[in-house]
Every structure is written in C-alpha cells, then in structure tokens.
Length: 277
Image (tube, rainbow, N blue to C red; front, side, top):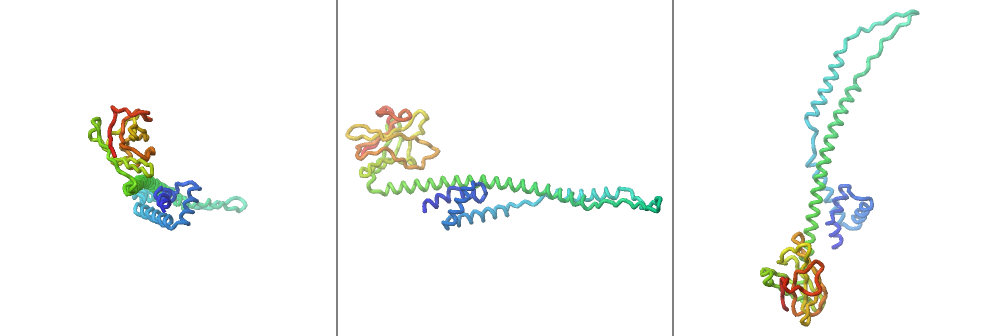
C-alpha cells in the first residue's frame, strides 16, 4: 500500500493525463491502473479536474475578428458592384457562327475563402491561448507535486520519529551546548540492544556549517572517543532522522566541528554540544 501511495504521489499520473510521458511510462501507468483501483480512481479524478479546468477557462474568439470577417465580405461585395455592366451582345460572324459571351466567374468561392481565412485566424488565436493556459496549468501541477512530495517527506519523518521514540530499547540523550555554543541543543536516540545511534536533525539547534567543515558525532566508549560519522546542518532540509555509526555501549555523546570529511581525533576546542547517559 505504501508503494501505491508513493506511486500516486510521484506525479506520473498528472504527466500521463497531460500526455507528457514516454511510451514505456504510458504502458506502466495503464498497467498500474488496471491492477490497482486506487491508481485508477486517482487517474479519473485528475482527468475530471483537467476537464473542469479547461471548461472554466474556455476562451471565446475576440469580437474584433467578427468585424474583420464582415468587413471583408462587404469589401468583396463592393468590388463586384464596381465593375461596369457590360451589355451582353451577340456578334454575327461569317458563316452564321454566333460568338457566345464569356461566363462570369462565380464570386461564391471568394467569400468562402475570406470566411475560412478569418476562422483560421480566430482558431489559431484560440489555440495559442489554450496552449498558454495549459502551460500555466502544467507549471501549477509541477509545483503542487513538489509540495506533495515535501509533505510526504515530512509525514515519513514524523512516522519514523514516533517509531523511534516509542521503541523502549532507545534512550533519548539531550546534548547541551558548551561554551562554544551556549544555546546549542541536539537529541540523540541510542539503542544498545540494536547497536543503533540516530540523530534528530529537525530539532537540531546548531548553526549551518560552511562547505569547508562538517559536524562530527563522537561516542565516549571506555573513556575513549569513537567517531560515529559526520553530518551537515542544512536549513533547506531538516526534516529527517539520520542514522549514524553503530555502537553498543557509550558513556556520553559529543559533537565537534571538524574539517569536511571528519577527523581521526576530536578537536576539543571545537566541541559544540555534549551529553552523558
């Protein structure tokens, strides 16, 4: 069920309705829709939404195009009436052969051509407007899909956070700021039974590190510091639980600011937060 939910939230269904998918992706969507009622229902909802959007934003041809067509027809009529009337006569030729007058060309096709041209211009204007609106709708769908993905990521983070904090094998240690960072705070979830150490980046109260440095987590094991890996503080994405290195016993945890990639031994003068069990 989680895979189906992720597939629906991936945005492939909206692109399928817009016709912006490859043949393989189209076959995949149709296969998923035939196998899963949830995918089929979501696809129908998207199609109905598209139809509703198109009907609500339908564009009537501009009024000045109607005047242009009428003016063209009046001009053609006037041109026909300006030709001098020629008296149809018959000319007797030798041997009693009568010369017949040339047949006047039918002006119907002239009017039909003018009307078709005007309708073509109007149709092109409407198509350009509809295309522009579809482009705007596509941009809005992409933005909505991005928002949905961010929301889904936030929900997944909250689920994982709750699962860890509800697991009785985990101990939550609050690492408090040192003199280098008095307001610093970091939560570490430690499970000796599972040999897991997880840090909560959502509640991390530490400044964003520059590109030349990273934060490094240390565990104090039998009086010796053991590196559990490095991490970054990124304000653009802080909705995650990050699993660090494995350890089954520790007396304390601390974080130092080290050169990017980490150090073999902690730089004690750059210790930011520390907490004991």
